[in-house]
Length: 302
Image (cartoon, rainbow, N blue to C red; front, side):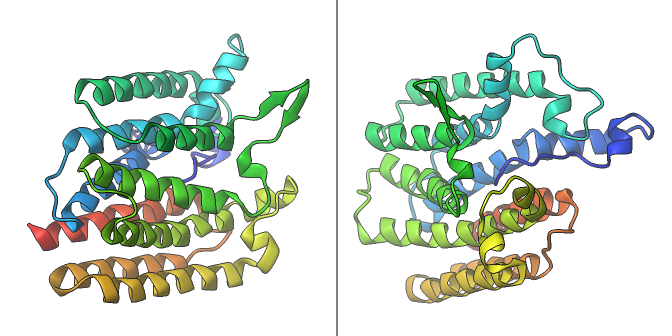
């Protein structure tokens, strides 16, 4: 949901203990953001299923590619700003060890997204897409104005989790509905947007917990820095509970039970989260909660 900074232990990065082939594949799936892009693909398909609309695979692929670009945008802009700077092969941070490859991946993904959008005639509100692009770019890339650098949106106190939830809810809920011809102000569209926003926001808070120590060293005020880690977990659980209440009023039958079950699984992940958990916990289980969410809906409706 938010780009992970570290691949693993620094002694492995330094070459003391080599990675196994399985660890290399898993690392690339998780930390190149391919895995989380698959989550965006799955949630987009889920939206079509929940709205009882024909699934548009091009729209789901577009969501995958747009997410892949966004999560590798920091590598793209780093290479563009410092083209001669070599990747640090001994860094403990995955993105630093593979900066150029991630930049290539991000560039290819945005080009492919443009091809899919134009080639399949995806129809979405251009102004909605533009403001999401500005948020996504401004989230990572600092803006230089009159020789002064304006810090990226992710550094604005308390803001980043709400931006993450908003962008994910628009891309995976509103975009597919708009592509299917539904207006964003229709009750069903607003309900699906609200549900997706609450679910993603509950999960996004966990990444603030993950980065609690780092954000304190950079003087970035986040929700855990404001109300504490324990209260942030409670807030996340409260959002999941509110999400379940909304579900009870908008869904029924086997789909309702599938969504409630996936929310309960997410609550377990929230309850076990802490700033001391390894990063793979967040990269695999927290992001994986989105994949489980979509998978449960698919199993309930096939």
